Image (cartoon, rainbow, N blue to C red; front, side, top):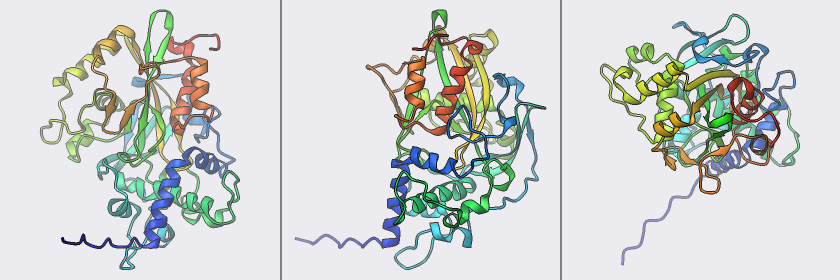
Length: 397
């Protein structure tokens, strides 16, 4: 009988790096609160740990069509990019003693989730949703953001888990966080590659305004960001369908990004779309046409409630709400999936419909449930503006 080959020993450096990645997922909410405390001067969104600037929260929800987008191809170089000596302490060494060049290179080799691809994205450079409104973007790649955001989260986790630091207590100072210190203010967008997710709370509005919403559990084996927590759905990085220059121009639309995410997360659609010269013909896509028709008819209202930054990973979210009349929702999402490429749809008593009530909002934003920071902020904002959105109840419960 042939003996099986001996298993190569895992270098201690790699084992520790993987352990910290697991701790990051297991204690994400606690670590986010710890990270937020590092920035006492920054406002929070709706009393959560999501960081913002005053101009990032409009006085009332904005129709998505009233959020203009601007573009520049001459984006400034970030002050911190997650490479070189500033990031060396968060990059493990292989068995040969060679350090990985970037955090994404380490993920690729040592802890790769199912969905991990360096795709073209839109980098947010400036934002104002309260004054002369507008969001200005430039070109970037997905790994540019991961190399910084995941690295500073790893760095903070390592400091929190180090001997002498008691879990749950701050016990940290900036000397233990040199990469985070190099990034500086998380809301100073040009200092880093700030990619945005269009994060949407989907509400099904029934008779009299009673509404329900969907939650998504993000599988850490499948996704790179916010694994092991609940999130509103859909939520996806603002990016074109391909790296083709024509696609970058064609898909520079929050609405088109949202449409694709509705298809992928709620209906289990693929991220790979039929394109011509890298462009998707939205006019020939029946699902897109139906959603657009619902917006035109007023049976689907899409609003932007603000913008915020996760203090732990620096993930930046554009917070939106989509309110569907019940009949339209039931028709468009008759094929609502129980599971998709990123995780599973959360059910309650066998149903994916979670009542949009004060009790539900409190449950998923009060710290008792593992909810992604932006999702918790969005739930609270939507409840705050429930009368404007035409949903919920004026009474608690």
